[in-house]
Length: 414
Image (cartoon, rainbow, N blue to C red; front, side, top):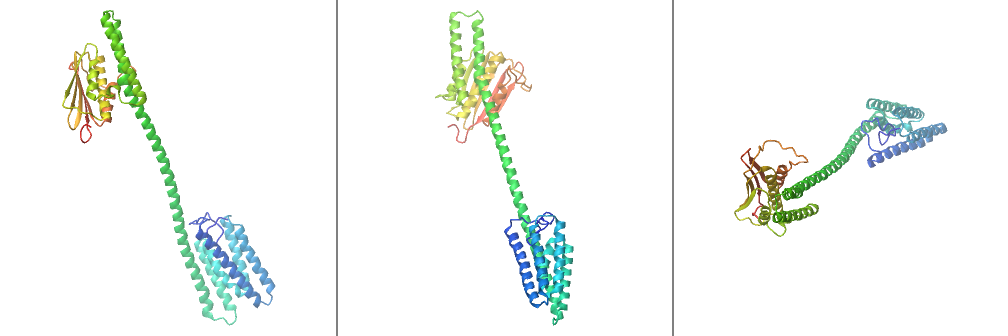
């Protein structure tokens, strides 16, 4: 019989305010009600047996009533209808015992609590009123009993029982609110943990994607550009128009480009800074980059302002942007001349790569593919990741200028 009250062992699931079975307050009040019923029944049995002409039937009736009460404890966890039937038999049995001996009248106090907590509220109050009427009637039947106490006593007992029942309902409601709040907190904590796990997974995935993008840009700006240079040099050597000295120069440049590509590959694998920046500032690395440019385009390198040692991330970004821009000049611009300009002041460092080639429409979408198209996107991404601004100024037949500006940390170059 589902439990609905500490004093009642029936209907736990149908009551408005369920109290957890293992609540210390609930357990204490339950056993207090059991003890109260047992105490009143034992005292009433003893006093009734002392005054009764035939005590044996009275004692047997009291024992049966107590056994029926214990049966309700054993049957705890069953349906509400069984609980109501159990109380009805208990109440009728008590009325019969009161008819035999008024000493059992005060068992009504324990029955009041049972009625108020086991039965629906209207029926519980009706049972209390009926029990009060039984007690008052029994008191009037007792010889020498004053009229006022006979009425006032049972009524006061009923009022106290109703008041205590109301207080208990309030306590039970607060206990249920706390239980629900704890359950909500546990559920919220579980949701928070699940959200945190999902967020951590998303962050890890984003980190993996960022790393893949970074590696792809590094490969494009280093290995792919180096391979392109080797292809162009090889084609020049295979054209049949080069003499031995020219072939030797081409092979030397191929060897240099391949060696640099090997260093770049190691850099990508070990996530190190570019080999051009090892033990050399950005100005020297850009100078060497310009010197190695081959083909029909004449490339110059110009510095404007004192370019001190820059943060490593800034140097790496600018070197990669210069590599990508010069690769585009070599492969697509058909330019006669290109100028790489590095400008620095106390606030930012600027890189411009300008050529007099064919130019193009920068507003025309460029779709990356296996044949290329990653260079501009990679240069823009590098600049923006460094907190800078990237721009391309170009038009068909008017050449192209690639501009990257990266702010310096507070205090300027390190």
